[in-house]
Length: 516
Image (cartoon, rainbow, N blue to C red; front, side, top):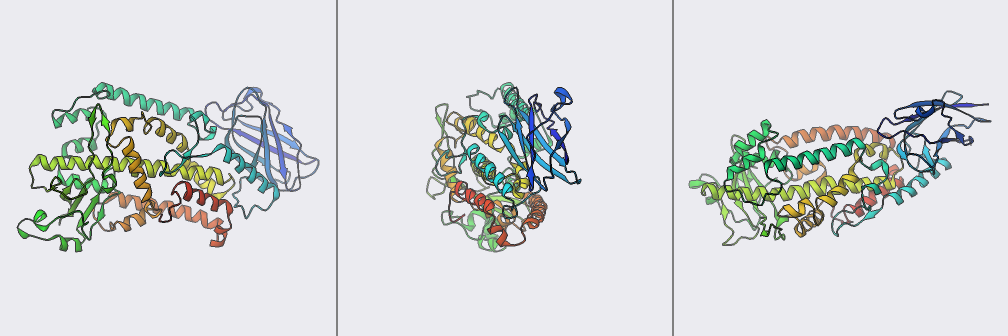
């Protein structure tokens, strides 16, 4: 009688242990085993956290090549995080069944053999059946929801506990998250900033922000934040290096003259633009946005245009700032030769605008809302056995829960961003819609984005230098894996699961906009 050796590994994470009865069935191309109870020969430690337990499953005849297994847990006591199952056939063949998920019910769960297979490679009817059953359940577990018209769609859940177990925060992650939030609030309390409604009477009062957790970088910023060369440097290597672009022609609404920027006729803009030495930052997305009211006071948010000049010593210096989009008598153009505090105030308004542009477009939209669409579409359309699922799933962990928390605690009606920022509330949604409407896939790819903005050769651009190196490493790895499974374009076209994944991203992430 053929006997199969079964090794069951319980994950080494908190609360992974189960005391329930566990049953297994082996399914092969030539038959299937009986439903087998996995006897607890080690007592309560058999399926303990991190335990590796061995069992035997005997069958009247050989099952042939194993295709999948069925796992069932009895319905009481506790949940179980099953890491993997390995089966050794009587002929010595090893079959691996990766699971890495919580089993919290008494349903029969199917798990495909671990070798990655595209849908057109998975020819066995049992393999196709398990794919279809898995995706039907995933469609129920991961449903689309429209949080606000005009921005990417999100997961439809009422609270974090409504999320499937395997995408929730782990115990360790939850503890870390709560600790970080608590220590941050305590720090604000100690600094007297948590409920402060008073204006700073002296610009140097901002020093109190840096009284804790000082670093060399924070000390440098504190000392040099007023300097023009550091102001320009931050457009390349600060928190938001995504807006600056080389300028070959002035926007029609930016009436800068040579006399404004070159004293005594020592140069002209046209020549400097031809040499590639003029750069533009345009915050037009913020134009005429409805601003917030905080503590009864209306807030102000500019939509500036800034020109920067690359000097012979390769510094990027601001040369003009216009704070609003429409030229007018009450919208002067500021230059470095203005009074010290006029020029400094103009730069502060630019930094305020950059905060909203970065937080809402670059951060919230591009690194939270859009990746959530990729994650949901992945979970709805690609089964565990698909090579793209195996490639991408580790990078989506916690995405759904952290985004739910962002929507409920940061950008909701009573969220922190809504209550305490100039662009919170209605203005936030306006900015997100504008950013979404101009979003393109190529802008998410560093090489294409850098080239489109004309920044291939600008010196001291460390975001570009480091980013392109990382891009190349990731690209070579992904290309090597994908080219192993897809030898030609027609194979990509006939992978119906992959095509549905892309279609969902286009519909729910890019909102079916043809220009993306």
